Amino acid sequence: DTAVSQTPKYLVTQMGNDKSIKCEQNLGHDTMYWYKQDSKKFLKIMFSYNNKELIINETVPNRFSPKSPDKAHLNLHINSLELGDSAVYFCASSPRPGHFHGYTFGSGTRLTVV
Amino acid sequence: TQLLEQSPQFLSIQEGENLTVYCNSSSVFSSLQWYRQEPGEGPVLLVTVVTGGEVKKLKRLTFQFGDARKDSSLHITAAQTGDTGLYLCAGDAGNNRKLIWGLGTSLAVNP
Image 1 (tube, chains in turn blue, cyan):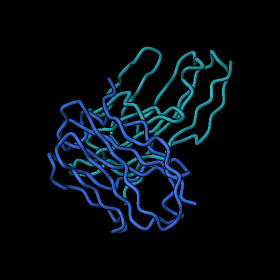
Image 2 (cartoon, each protein chain N blue to C red):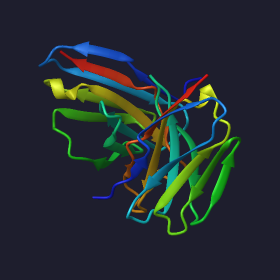
Image 3 (tube, rainbow over the protein chains, first blue to last red):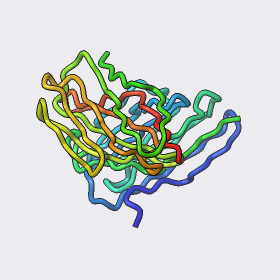
Image 4 (cartoon, rainbow over the protein chains, first blue to last red):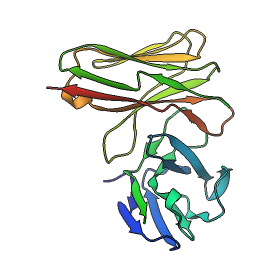
């Protein structure tokens, strides 16, 4: 059983398109996250939700919009894709806000904008 | 801005060798985590250290948290090819918000 699953694994799309990435966790965790990992492998937090409520909203273009229909799901919608959006996007979850117990990450979605 | 510096950035060694990688900051952290990331996968939590001076062992991996809780090290004994990956440290500043991540040490263990 996959603990944190994201789809799709790979996404190749043209500039200007709109795309979504889906994430689901079956761990019963309250908190979920979206991270962006750039070509230099730096992990940058984008958003965090705790039990469907937005608790972290970093400086991210408003073309990125997260949605959490329930605490087991956190989706990411991106409008008007740009070349600079190309990266690997990771979903993660933790039992609650705060970091003592660590995060469980999905296997990532590699987004390529051409 | 809080930063975590990891060194070395790249490390290539032969199977059986020992190695140490470092994670340093000028800031104090309430806890610090180490993750390993393999190609095409997400980071996987290895350990969380909380107390200054704490040492934790995970088979051949030994993690240490500095006395002042500003730095940490990871020592691998008798490295194996399965240890290959990107080792990331992440610090919790204690404000219950975002983790502070390092850039990682990319380790290649050659047969």
